[in-house]
Length: 341
Length: 277
Image 1 (cartoon, rainbow over the protein chains, first blue to last red):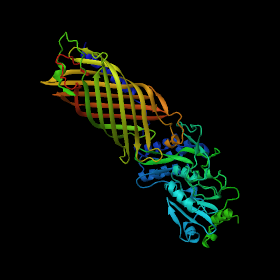
Image 2 (image 1 turned 30 degrees about the vertical axis):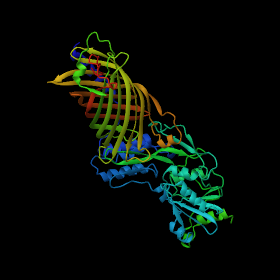
Image 3 (image 1 turned 90 degrees about the vertical axis):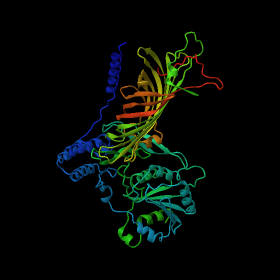
Image 4 (image 1 turned 180 degrees about the vertical axis):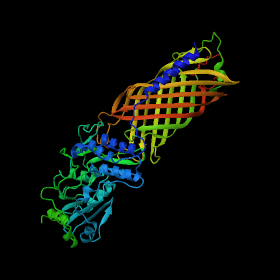
């Protein structure tokens, strides 16, 4: 056998096989134009709320592409890109560079602030409350339990929840204050909801992108939460959840589930929404981008991206004049509702 | 266990020898290090560049049923990649463990050349972790594959030092592999949506190839193994593309080992059939 010939056959086969190892990936230059196109394309292929928000993303491209020049500075590019992302009107969408992180604030800044921490702590808790697992809690004079959970990013321990609910167990009702709770981990939502349900309960639906097209979505997948394990302390008495425009993302998701549980009322104003689970990606220049990519629907299959209304008859805002006099009108309303006054 | 020097394997048995042939195990332990280029569009559209390190165990042995013609090969390896994005402000890590078992038919050619071809089954599992991502920080990799493989060896000398050169490719032909859907979070999988996660593999959506070039420098009972390895991986499923190209230099030890019953020596007339040549 001719060894050289054999070797050339083997080499040819290897090269032919290596040639198969190519799936094309779109690539962009690291210049203002390339980074702009990368950002637009990432959103074009992955963002999940174009249809709900009626956004013509191609039109957005035309508008902002005209503002891009390869001679512009990084700062100038950043603000053009940030403005483009603001067209999505999405609090889950950020562009992060070494010098700034863009953030669409109008989802809450266009609305009154419904929560004052000082007001609660001074006039209702007398600066005397307990704290564990990121939850402040106390018994109000009307024998109503009060829990303040400021962020679902704070892990909730099962034993901590047992301690809290046991401490409040003699109360006639429970207030869970999640105003200005900007979200966190959905697993903490599950842990908390599990104390208020007695059977496996539909918690919502999740739908993800199946491809780069704007209408490429999976069939909504129903997901369920189980009650807390046997032996854990549960809560079956009336509950008022205080929510407002600052109730966002995972906190919004918590409201979307709790609103359908018997004995639970949502008190306050429309929540901030933020029902899109964010994905992360990045641009050639190293900036990172975060955006809504996966839609979570409530247990009735409704989108909550634009917020959740309070329970019927429970819409009430924080009266700033009353607040000056030491009254949180939303909390007062909830106390009155739970005490039957 | 007895380690065989390369010369022992050279020894030809008498023509009238009728005992069972001895089939030494060729075992090798190697450390490998080199460069890698990695992209996974579930995590990032950018190609990351960096380094790859690996540890590999390889075991080869002539098969009992037809030792002259058939050889078994078992491998187990662990690979770690540490890569950076083009702007060098984010890291992506990859860890992967793989095992293969296969058989090859070999043909002994003139000039001390052996060619072999056959198949193997392989399993690998691992993950790619992008440290800057929030809800999509990890892409899990898992595959069960049927592979085609083979090798070419050339037994030669450098001066008086016996040397065995080998080239061995391995290419998955078909199988199954794991991938989430295009925009599916692992949180959704955690919630119970396990549809569409397993995919049939063919060269159009799953191409992988390992090229292995080794030189065993026989230094008595053991050999110093040096060489090069190349990994190519390119998958595209659910509009998610993964590519890995890595090159590694190899250094390690190899040797041929025989199990001998206690109290019995090595039969001088026994036929010794090496796995590699």
